Length: 361
Image 1: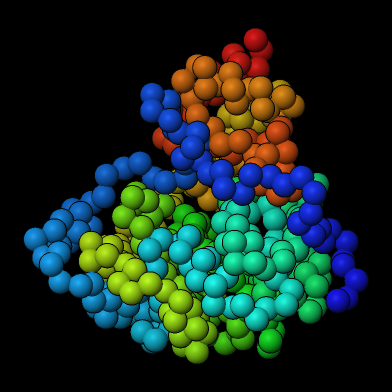
Image 2 (image 1 turned 60 degrees about the vertical axis):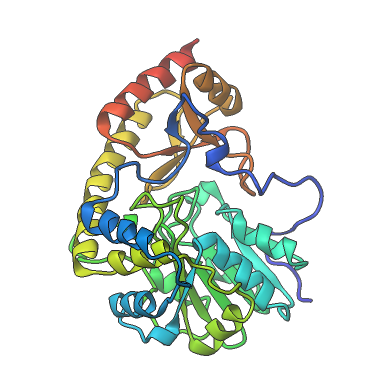
């Protein structure tokens, strides 16, 4: 094994709770800023096809139409799409199918399920920890050259950092599987860019690239469980071989087809633009609070903030009826980090006042 680059950390010693997620904090009776799922009800063009499947559940699910619809959306062939029961299943399939990898690396801080799935499958995991002093930006040279599986989010949960597509593309090479978690790609916007800035979903030229997508965030479908993987057919075939039969339900397949239409993409872009304005409002209000630091420029449906005594403040916020996401369960962060979901401006303003009072108490 080659020498570890600076910032490379093996998973030994005391470990954060990788199984902890925001839904554990958004308990009943609290205003939920801990979960990154959009809370609006699904529109009729999405809800109606889902509901229509409920009279035809005796038949086994057939993913053919949904796979073709997703492929068409991304300009790919259907054999370059693997539908999954939520994005989280994709991480499990990768960990189980790629048993032969020797040096898997996870870039943190990020969603903890990729590492948790690798560990559960018996893989030794190494970490590249990105530095908040550098706005959690990625330098590809920090990933070991002999890493044969690399996993990174874009935009990354919980940092809300959007890495440049060219930076991520620099990680691709023959003999390596590069997994880019784009579960929140549909939340991103950029001036003058009509689509999803920095997405690799339509790139078919990068060796070993797997792009993971989720439909549960923007469309409020976390309970339905629907996502997909994009990649080379030979790689997806390996993943499909370890996937349970009929893993994606008929209602979830209907959702995948509906979310791949031109109407859906147009609506998604409008939602992302509104989200950007609401996020800018949240960041501006947070930056008015003494001692609160928002690292970098958030690009997704959540904001990561640092404040001294964050753990105690989070507990006090709960007492006042507000749930935010703790940061210390993410490798590379600690108890003074909190993740806050972007909501409408009225909710943000109410939260800021409660946070201010909590910090002054």
